[in-house]
Image 1: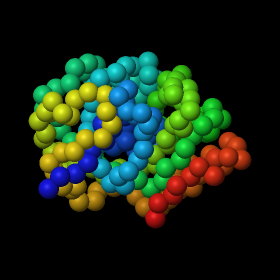
Image 2: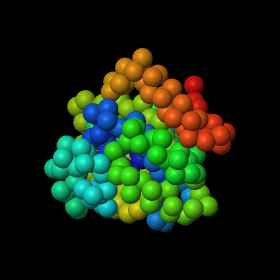
Image 3: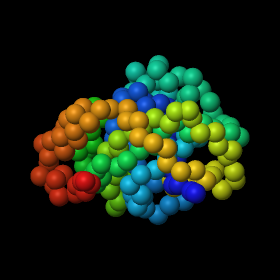
Length: 196
């Protein structure tokens, strides 16, 4: 069987597994015209390309220094996480982006760059319920998995559920994200796609 994987920085995946990040901010890879979230469950495939210490908040720079220090893609990786999308919000203003700061580990300046890049397209804020994969799934990196693209197909089923954040805590996070965006501007609530 096969599953879909989303490529994400190894440091960000580690933060998600630690519960330090619940919102992914995405606009897609250089070769993609627009980022969309067509999959509601997917593996997280760690990548090392482009991640640098100065692009993360100081606490994340320290916590994940060993992962940030890897600058080339290894030939074999371990899949340690998968996630289920709980909500997707389109973020179009700096105020909305600022409201999401407590929910991710990207540095303020870099998050702002993502918002301003391709300004006609909104920044997608994906609220994701992350699950651990124990033991990790070893995966050989093939040529079609490399490069600046977001979604890839891998030959693995999704593992069983092992959420990083329990039900009550995750419900509180969902409410916090929605309330923060609503307070950031009147348009925020109109862009939300909350999934049941």
